[in-house]
Amino acid sequence: MIPLLHDFEGQTVMVFGGGSVGARKARRFAREARTLVVSPAFDGEREFGDSELVRAAPTPEDVPDWFERTRPALAVAATDDGELNAAIEREARERGVLVNRADTHGSREPGSVVVPATVREDPVVVSVSTGGTSPALSRELRKRIEPEIEGAGEVAAVAGELREALSGLAAERRREALRGVVSSSSVWKDLRSGDTKRSQVVADVIERVESEGDSA
Ligand SMILES: C[C@@]1(CC(=O)O)c2cc3[nH]c(cc4nc(cc5[nH]c(cc(n2)[C@H]1CCC(=O)O)[C@@](C)(CC(=O)O)[C@@H]5CCC(=O)O)C(CC(=O)O)=C4CCC(=O)O)c(CCC(=O)O)c3CC(=O)O
Ligand SMILES: NC(=O)C1=CN([C@@H]2O[C@H](COP(=O)(O)OP(=O)(O)OC[C@H]3O[C@@H](n4cnc5c(N)ncnc54)[C@H](O)[C@@H]3O)[C@@H](O)[C@H]2O)C=CC1
Image (cartoon, rainbow, N blue to C red; front, side, top):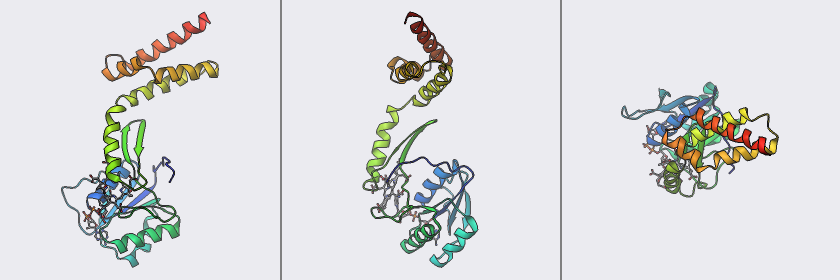
């Protein structure tokens, strides 16, 4: 499997099953997509983000109709009924729709996707998969990575501003300056501590690059 980032803005994700797994996936997709959760029962304590909850108990024969009416970009099969999950996977495959099946690993239908463990510090995103072999390890690695990337969102924002500000430089010098910034422990430290503002870090780097340019 090959990791890619998919933009679900303006698309529909249909989640079958409103248990703990369905809810977790629904919260994830509802950040971006119109997300529908189809389930005969919903536990009031459970969080589904901004998803629309639809109370229904489709049988495998009903599945094509749900796809026809909803036209999802991705379907999630997270019910506790293996036959139903298999029907969802089959229908998605026939229609060329992406499918995430929560109750299997190993051999998959073409077009199937895995939901990785994810750490977000917008705009930075780090995801871990074990190819379905050990979800518990994905979770563990996600926890280890969390503190490691703390501050990466701010570092990305600074580097993004510098890419614009330094766009007049020769490519090789710009590249060197940008690599220098993202690998600088003092930049990370300043941004993590919150003592130094983003604009100050950007201004300092520009000043340094310009003075190096003068002496070169
Ligand atoms: C293939 C995959 C399909 C998919 O769902 O996309 C899948 C399948 C299955 N998971 C199972 C079990 C568990 N899943 C978790 C947790 C997570 N599972 C997630 C993803 C994936 N799970 C995909 C592969 C990811 C990869 O490649 O590594 C995470 C990363 C993302 C998310 O779901 O949001 C999320 C952690 C999020 C986080 O914390 O960051 C835990 C841990 C726990 O609960 O503490 C357990 C119990 C311990 C264990 O089994 O390891 C079972 C057996 C069910 C049973 O026994 O009945 C199956 C079915 C099977 O393997 O056959
Ligand atoms: N991918 C993952 O991370 C994990 C996957 N699993 C697997 O995922 C599946 C679901 O796990 P849980 O959410 O913990 O189970 P759960 O039992 O809490 O939830 C199952 C949900 O499916 C719903 N459902 C039943 N019949 C339905 C129908 N006809 N149409 C739509 N919804 C229907 C139930 O009402 C319930 O809300 C299990 O088969 C389990 O093996 C379990 C743990 C983790």
